[in-house]
Image 1 (cartoon, helix red, strand yellow):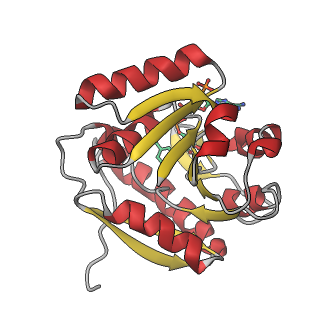
Image 2 (image 1 turned 45 degrees about the horizontal axis):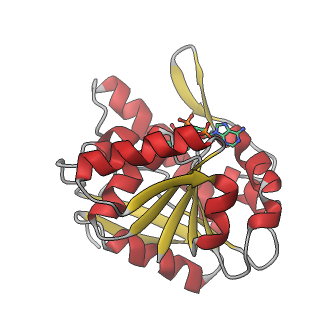
Length: 218
Ligand SMILES: NC(=O)c1ccc[n+]([C@@H]2O[C@H](COP(=O)([O-])OP(=O)(O)OC[C@H]3O[C@@H](n4cnc5c(N)ncnc54)[C@H](OP(=O)(O)O)[C@@H]3O)[C@@H](O)[C@H]2O)c1
């Protein structure tokens, strides 16, 4: 599987890419500009000493990747999907990582959306034949980027296609220390997006950047 990123130059995408490439997965970091894509890929290659990551324009990356992560700011997600509509290929899996949040007087809060979650909002824009999965919403970029730090956490995967979820869970399972858990249908993104807000709040009150989730008893 080749994994691509729309908005592959931000900290969340670069952190995920480092973990995936280190797990032996080929990655293409997409961007709206070739220079930014090239720089992000070069940084990733130099940190890992491997050639298994390259940069490309979003529209060039998209047709060649079986699984594509959407790692743009949450407000831009539907616009990014619309802009790239013609480049999607039937059978691809789109992984929504976005979290609709804002800070009100320094406190993180989830932005209420009519659709219930940003994943469900994006679902209305995804071309036919593309399966949407919500995942990796609760892993902080800071932790992902510290590649020598064991992840030691769970990642929650939701979606309405069992096969698409399985594909994403297979990718996650290859990353050492990361346990993928099937969180149910796409509407579960409402909960996952809330959990991220909780994690940020906990991190702030504990003056940490590393708070993340591990479910016990499973
Ligand atoms: N940061 C975290 O710890 C974290 C944790 C969990 C989930 N998330 C979610 O992951 C997503 C990415 O987070 P981030 O902090 O990495 O974001 P970011 O740095 O703000 O943005 C990521 C990339 O998105 C691209 N982008 C910006 N505006 C765009 C637009 N209008 N259309 C297309 N692409 C656009 C930019 O790439 P180019 O300019 O190169 O095209 C940018 O480098 C967010 O939705 C966030 O909610 C983040």
